[in-house]
Length: 146
Image (cartoon, rainbow, N blue to C red):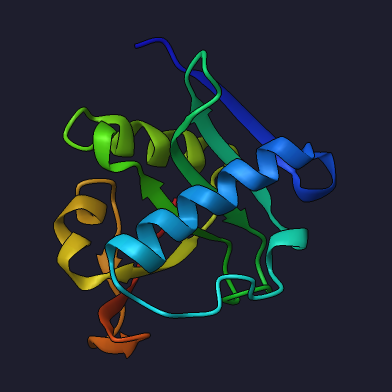
């Protein structure tokens, strides 16, 4: 499957793109993970949005690039998603590699679902907190320094 990659500021998103991003985030974080939470947290307008879509414009991977000072003192990468049909293909790793390249050589802090510690560890992140509950899902903060 051939994918095209996009990196846009919030104000540059077309309505169709924003709708597709929101639909994927809801499908994975709300429905699949059975987690009622407020996805519209006010941070999106300050972020860049990175995603891969196929020729039908279906998004298969997405994340948002969060500037320092918005969620954490450091830059962050959040709302990291690989659509269910694309899991196990390496697309999630490619997404994170592209996200790290896009934020540049800076310290990055993430709030990761605890079960993904090894995935992020393989990308150079180390645990930076004890486990905590976020919307009923165990999370940990992880840090990656340049």
